[in-house]
Length: 231
Image 1 (tube, one colour):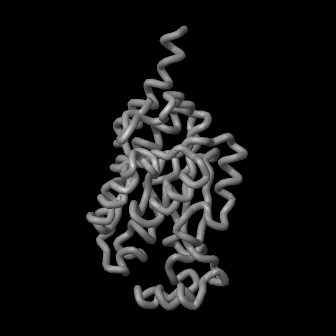
Image 2 (image 1 turned 135 degrees about the vertical axis):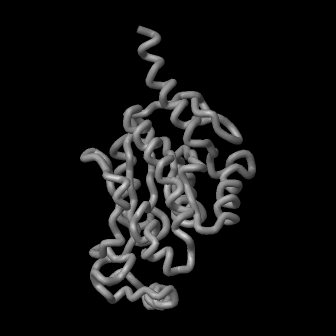
Image 3 (image 1 turned 90 degrees about the horizontal axis):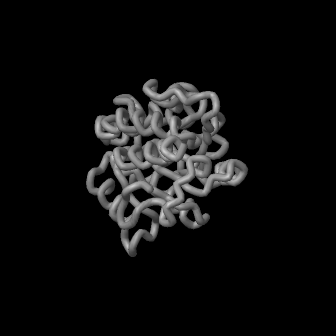
């Protein structure tokens, strides 16, 4: 099991890497770069970048344990056909021209849409592109999870209070068992980050459980070592 709060994960003690996936949410240039979308909104991306080493360790441990890794990226279509007038208005308030093609931001043909250079998905990793904050909304994420037999999800990425939390709530409603890796998530707003983590644990874990990256890694390593000890 993985040591977590308000209870250990998973609840029945059956930690099966083949049924577990790590979701790495939106670690894109637009969010983590000093010149990206997030910085233009007035937030300091340095707060987000602090989790990079932790997520790197987590990804490595999850990969070694045999879990699937799913990366998400958020942005509008290159032709902006999926952006409403309200989306465009909000972007303009942030100093972003969604009609700017490759010169714009939050667009799938722009440089900022890519993951930051510190992360290079493996060939058997899965990438899900999304327009909304939640990774389930109008994507094939749920189809992928069902096809792969995934029932347990670990959450990391940015931002804790928006895309990570939205996707986690969507997953809980779909009956996935969810664990938020607190120090592998970040927000530009410290209060919002702490509040989002707290909300997972209220009502005795209504949205799942919370654990540190070290505890997740330790739990996964223990699961890998068990067959060797039995042999």
